[in-house]
Length: 252
Image (cartoon, rainbow, N blue to C red):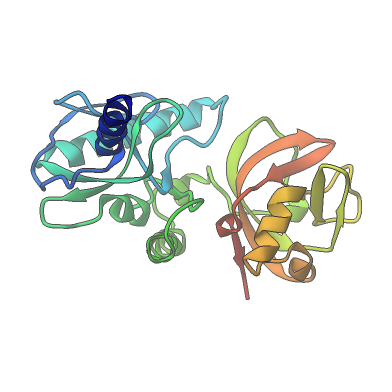
């Protein structure tokens, strides 16, 4: 009997954790909150996966104005018609928001539109390769056209040689990796001759080993021109820590 109840409980948990296909037109917008959580009239709190709207933990007035403008634009677009949500794995983030791809009723992928219009920066960590490639192509088109956030100059790309140590900020950095080395906890990819002043990427040693098993070796990046995207923080000089190689692009 106890085994039967346990089996029923396990089945109920599986049902709760399994994403249910959601029909287009099922959801309408209630609000786009200040942290860009999208809330629906049915009470769901949504986090669009693959894009980033907020780029600084301590934003200056120009970024605050930009955020307000983007929130108004997103609210306008999402109120225009019902939208479909397609859950991603894992289903919820640490704030309990449902992680989703958003689509218009006609199938248009809204994250791709937002990136192409320069309203968001791609955050590719954990994205399936086809989705990541589409978003990066849309972002390249927006950067080339100089629209939205790229016209504002809020996300870079910043040359590694001129990057300054700063408080936490999400930015694109471009440069040639000079050397790599490992300590007890981290491995490092240095972009300058002075490790105490120049830009450095750090990756935890277990993550480096996991990357290598996937065919992505940190040492193979030395001498290559790269574009990295992530949070910059001060650790002597400017530093970025990554745990997904999707955040590193090889440039010509």
